[in-house]
Image (cartoon, rainbow, N blue to C red; front, top):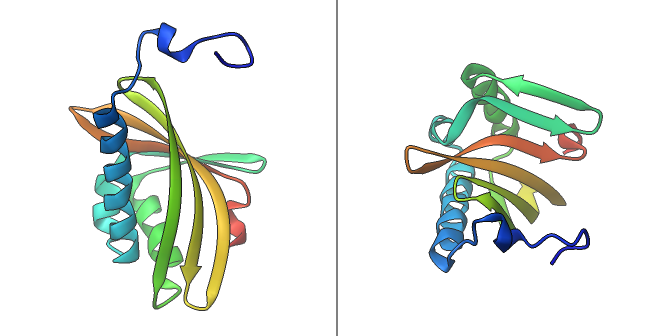
Length: 139
C-alpha cells in the first residue's frame, strides 16, 4: 500500500522480475550508446515528439532537435562515464516511469543527478518519451 492507501498491484499489473530486468537492460544499452556518443542510435530509442521537462519549463523535441542537443551535450568532452542506480515504477505493462540516481563524469567535471524517464512500449520495444530533470541546463 502507498501513503494514499492504493495498492499498485491491485491496479491490474505487477511486473515480473523479467519485466524489471528488461527495463534495466534497456537503460544499460542506452547508457552504453551515450558513453559511445552514438546519438543517432540513442534517437532510435525515442518516441517523438519527445518531451523534456525541467524547472518551470516543458518542451517537445523532434528527432532533429534531439540529435542536435545531444550531440552538443555529449560532444563537449572527450570522455563520458556514468554510474547509475535505477528504480522503475510500472504503471501497467506498457508504461514505466524510471527514476535514476547517477553520477555523470564528462572530462574533469563530475556531477550527481536525479532524473526520471517515461518509457512507452511500442511494438514490443521500449521507447523513451519524456525526460524529467531539475536543473537540466545547469550541467
